[in-house]
Length: 100
Length: 252
Image (cartoon, each protein chain N blue to C red):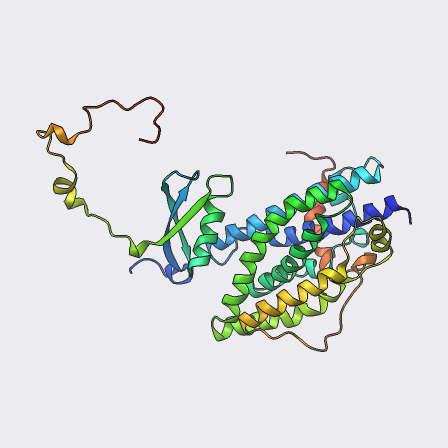
C-alpha cells in the first residue's frame, strides 16, 4: 500500500454495518481502523452507535469485500428496458406493507 | 458525624473518583494513539464526568447549604477532595492509562452492581445507569490489558511496569471508615469486603490471560479518605479549576 505510514499503526480498515431496529437490514455506516475483531466492534460502537443509532453491528475487514468495478457498469447495471416484464410495475403493493 | 454528613462525604467520594479520573482521561483528547482509540478514551471520560455531575448534584442537595454542583467541582481545595490516589495518577504512556483505567473499572463494575441494592433510592438509580456504562468500559480496558500483555516485548514490559507502579494505590480502594460504618447500618453503602473478593478474582483472571504478574509485598499507600493526596492532584486541580476561579460564575 502506498498510503502514509499511519496505516501501520492504525491497524486494518473495517467496514461497519449498523442495524437500526430488529428486523431491519444492516446498512453501511462507514469504516473504522482496528487491530482485531473485538477492537473493530468496540470502535464501531464508539463511532457510530453512541446515540441510540442501532441494535446490532457487523464489522467486516474491508479487504474481504468483493466489489464490482466501474467498468462493469454497462454489463452489470443497465437493465434491458425492452423487457418490461423484468420490472415489478404490474402489481400493487397492499397498504400497510413497509420496507419494500 | 451525622448520617447526613456521612452521606455527603460518601457521594463526594464517588463523584470525585469519576471527576478526577474523567479529567485525567480528557487530557488525552486529541492525543490518543490513533483516531478510534482517541474517541473511545474521550467517550469514557465523558461517561465518567456525567456520572460525577449526577453525584455532585446529589451531594449538594443532601448537604443543603446552597452550594451547586459546580461549586463542589471547582471551588473545593485539594484537601477537600476524596478521590482515590489511583484516580489522580498521571497518564504517562498508554499502558499506564489503560492499567489505571482497568483497575478502576474492575472495582467500579462490582461496586456499582452492589450499589444498585442501596436503600438510598437516588444512589440505587444512579448505580443502575452507571453500571451499564462501566460494563462497557471494563470490556474495553480488559481487552487492552490482554493486547498489551500478550503483544510485543515492549508492550508487555510497559504494561507490567504500569501495574507494578500503580499496585501500591489499590489497597485503599477497599478502605472503610466511619462514613461506611454509619451508612452500612442504614443499608446505603456497599460493603467493600464483598467487592474486594470479586475484584481480586477478576484482576487475577485478566492478568493470567494477559501474562501479567500480580506484584507481591507492595507497601500500600493511603490517605484519600481523609483528603490526603499525592502531589499529582494539586496540578490537576489547578488546570481543571482555573477558568472557573478566574471568571467566577462564567457560563458558555
